[in-house]
Length: 257
Length: 260
Image 1 (cartoon, rainbow over the protein chains, first blue to last red):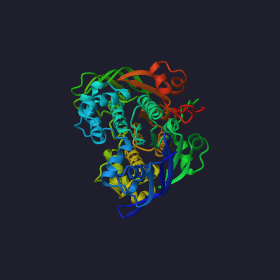
Image 2: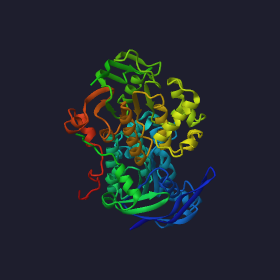
Image 3: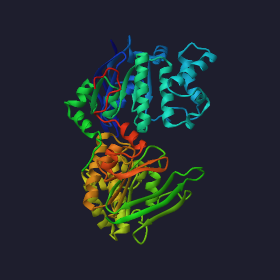
Image 4: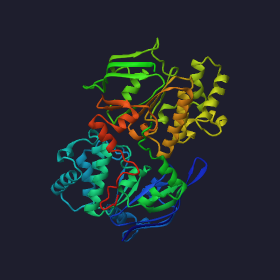
């Protein structure tokens, strides 16, 4: 069942004096409970697409259907209410939080805004959310700056699932993490998807990471989607130059003679 | 094989830190080798690179010794080039590319500015910057992240150092640019027969480039050996875990029911 349908999305801006087409007629669909990996080099348009979907920047043309909504025309109260359904996790985990916030207050904000829970019930819910992402409830009183990078990314995931979304947009969400931490976060994301039927738009320049979590992979190049298919097909039989160079760029464990 | 330097009981503690960031009992570096220093955050890999380069902050306490076989320790900028993780902060935003790349040569190769600029032009061309003549007069912000890192490499090589230290030089860049930069580094180091210290968190990236791997964890040396030996017969559990948690394109999908 289609959850998200993007059609002919276009975005242009001016960099210095040079006009740039950041998104050029981008169309894609994502089914409920599935992961679409979005690959591409820096500047290919991945993050622009994420920001438009999250309504952080306007599009110049095109249409997005998300759940039952004409997503880009929602505004005001309707948009605020519906935002609960589409959440995000970004790469720069410290920059994604108010630096003075505690872990608990980071999780309280979305609950206060989007859930009918009273304060005491919210505290119980925060403890449950922390537990679900593998953190101890006692962490709630700690400053977001005083926890490790991996813990902070777990808090970001807890914040994203707090509003019971049907879609989470993850933009390079594991790229800055150590490999051992990265692996546990990827596993957590897959578990949460199984358990709650959340769909992911998983943006990364690392095809090895996308292979781990994606049902399908779309490859972007210069603002266009140049290839889209089942994850295994795109990686094993890339058809576009952009996909071929991404495949070739993944470092292999080389045992030299 | 000529010894370049020997580190003995090297212990580095940063200001107001209780525990040492680096605590090495012994490590040798051979002249002309490509040594990869691998570790996760907090492993001490950057501290090791900076200690070798003499670039530790003054407030850091450094015990033990780094015994160089040369009479004097290598002078950074002249005998030893250093490429940092983030070229946006290592390059000076208000100096032209030409000034920054020529500077090392002018200082240390006794060249006039015009000679140094010709030298800089050749270096900028050798790191693959298109139209090197106009690049010399441009500023860092006019280039992409990958190109800025190429320029930083050119600047590090300006005085023809015999040692190059590259500290996580690709971790802010996408993988296609990363592959290009590593290929470039490989070629430059080979041409000039330099000693390369390649610091990275990525064991696979290191395996394509290095003769020898040093694995650090929490400031201590976990394992050290020839690349093939460490990968094929890792001696420590930590190295085994590091290899196992590395994802490649042929790693299993985490999705349930995936038939791989």
